[in-house]
Length: 180
Image (cartoon, rainbow, N blue to C red; front, side, top):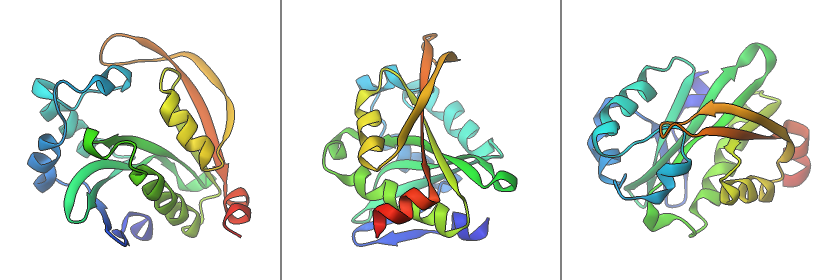
């Protein structure tokens, strides 16, 4: 597990485990008026920031990384539902501040997290995406993820919306073939 959670470095990027000392830096990049919150399962802005941040840190099977681009915090992403016994995990909990969306940054980060998971021996990485979030679905499809199906009315979001969740996955051998 230590290898999975070690910091990740790439040119202009640094990912480190989210910790209490990141609270104010993350708060500063989560604007209250960001319309993306409507399709997120939780809310990291305004009065909801502190309880949500606390829950992220307290969830035992959630391992979130703060993402720094050129030294500045720009978002978070990480591993959820890590199941070492069955060699699988979920990649998610991603938030990017509005200024970096559409820049290709997330397309640089996801491969780093995928490569790390597969290098640590995981054989399956899945993505659980709100069916309304077409942008995220296209992004994981571009990574080579396979759409496996839809869990209907699977989760109640912070807004009270009962969402359908689209499940995607990438297997280690698929990732290796894509990298070759």
